[in-house]
Length: 310
Image (cartoon, rainbow, N blue to C red):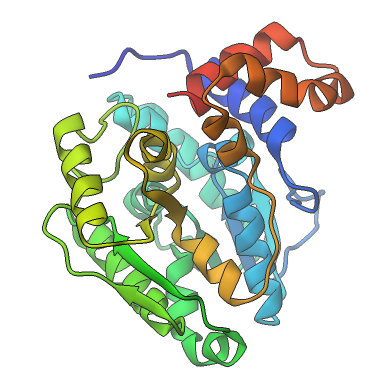
């Protein structure tokens, strides 16, 4: 097991880095005002998703394209508790999950969408009869409204390998939904593979995909003539993007392909920083934003090293 990092450090680096690299237009609130209610639909941005803020940004733009009215709740204050679960702090996970679940209930939400399957896991473990809303992964609403999305899609000529995880029903369901979504995009060809399945519940810093398996996945994609390997989760994206430098196959999050099909422009600062392949250059490129927010450059450097250059 990876070395346990103090939770305060984990959440603070996510908050700081998320602010510094967030695309303009990403918006969320940490909590509603007293007696304020949300839209019936809530987009939940988990704390760790903010390490790759273009992912929730795209999710918001897609939902707007679909004509959905929603409220976005995010940040460490809306943690699901999954990070605590990974380190065996089950009582802490339960406490954190219930805080967020109760906040959704007070907001009078009818549906809460998450971007991360670990959030689905933690909320699923602790959601009870007093929580009257539906909680599910955002892929569910995409599939339920796939006809609406199809009507908006433009062709994206791309031969792809889909990296996935099938450790449990949640992951299998997400893999099925993402596959259906990619198949719906005109021009996208899904290539059959043997080496694209990742380990466990996701590729994470606490449980990374072994290097030999990673190299095999990229080598197979190259042999098949794939244009890119598509990642289902933000954690997989963070872990495998660096391999693009070494092994020459483009790495995309599935929402990036959807954005291209829907003509949604987006800035991906995380990608830009990692492909510089230099922490010094990455920090230098962030200096104007670091100064804008009044952060200490040495602190941001540590977060870039730990999160972007993982």
